[in-house]
Image (tube, rainbow, N blue to C red):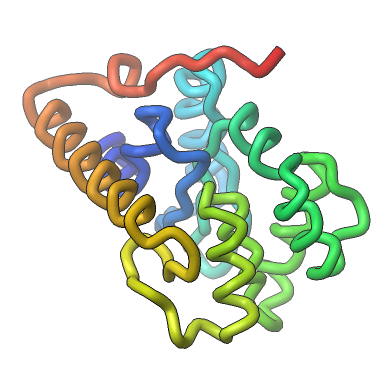
Length: 187
C-alpha cells in the first residue's frame, strides 16, 4: 500500500477535518498487510491517528483510518448513542463499537449503515439514511444528506479542496509525516 493511495482516500482525516475514512486495499499476503499497517501506524499513532483493518477477504482488506479522540467525541453524542443502541450495539465504548462494526462487516449480512457515525457523518444524516432507506435525500456528496444541506455542501467542498491540496503537496515531495496533522487526545 502506498502513501499516495492513503492520501488520495483519506486526506481529510489526515488533515484533522474528518473523523475517519474507509477504503479498500489489496495485499499479496496477510504478512504484507500486517507489515504495512505497522509501518503506517508507527507514523500515524503519535499524530493522533490509527489505521485498522475492518474486514479481510481474498487478498483485499477494508481499512479504516481514524482519529480516536474525534471518534470518542462523535460516539458520545446522544443522537449517535441512540442510533447505536437501536442498531443493537450492547456496549458503547469506542473499542467495543469498533469490534462490533468489524464483526458486522465481516458477517456480510445487512450492511451496517451506522458506519456513517464512525466516519464523522452527522447523526441526523445517518438516521435519515436508515429511516428513508437511502431515498429522498436533499443532496449527495460524501454521504446522503437529510439534515443541514448547506453545512454538508461546505464540508464536501472542504474535503475536495483538502484532497486536492494534499495530492498536490504529495506530488511536490511532502511525506506522510508532514501531511498527517498532529492532534492531541481529548482531556
